[in-house]
Amino acid sequence: MDRKDNFGSLLGQDFNIGDIVEWTTFDKIQQEWLTNYGIITTINKEITSGRLISVSKVVPINGIQPEIKFFTASLKLVSRTSDLND
Figure 1 (cartoon, rainbow, N blue to C red):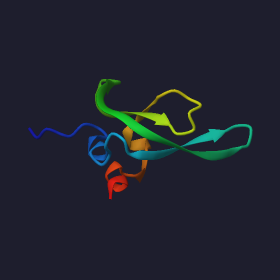
Figure 2: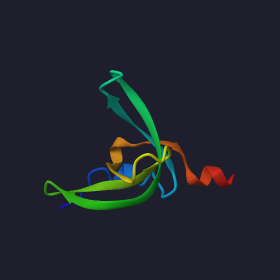
Figure 3: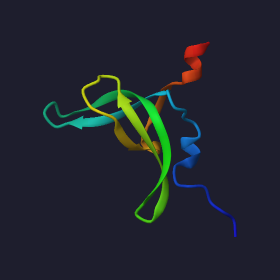
């Protein structure tokens, strides 16, 4: 039997700690989607609903919120850590 990759693990391989990512949230007052930015601090595998998934913790750049946990597939890469060193 072939072993399948964890849900979201292929996408998780595209991210590194220190990468800048974005995600959206819906603002009920303004009635629009807002784009948020943050820096990945950890990428882990966790069991959720009996399934192993890729989870990332992100520190928002705006500094208003503490570290937030995301399903890695819900994040979009903005800038790689390695891009900053070039």
